[in-house]
Image 1 (tube, rainbow, N blue to C red):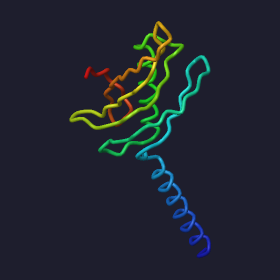
Image 2 (spheres, rainbow, N blue to C red):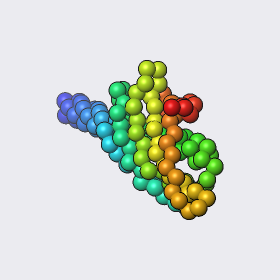
Image 3 (tube, rainbow, N blue to C red):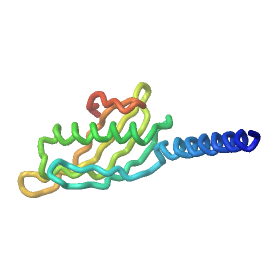
Image 4 (cartoon, helix red, strand yellow):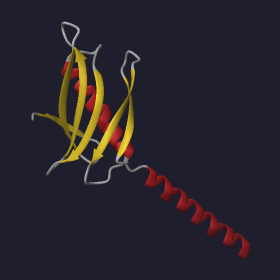
Length: 132
């Protein structure tokens, strides 16, 4: 009986510590790479610079970045040559802000660099495109 109790206690401690380690790994680091794929199969490894004041889960930020990429792609009106370069995250007074730098191919085959800003919250909800 005593051995069963000790085993159950040890197992519960091991299980709790594994969940604690798993949760620590889910917080967004200072810099990381966001993987994104367009519908035509083009894949991108986009560097993300995290300057947020609040800790955010990677899963929620990935959801927000997927929405931001889609909105940026639609607003750029250039599906074929849309190429995201970098995302920078920073905190504003009310919401978090994502700055996305990307390029599109212009009419005379020149690269046009553009920057869009989007507001989002800590739960991964993306709101409006901001005009700066």
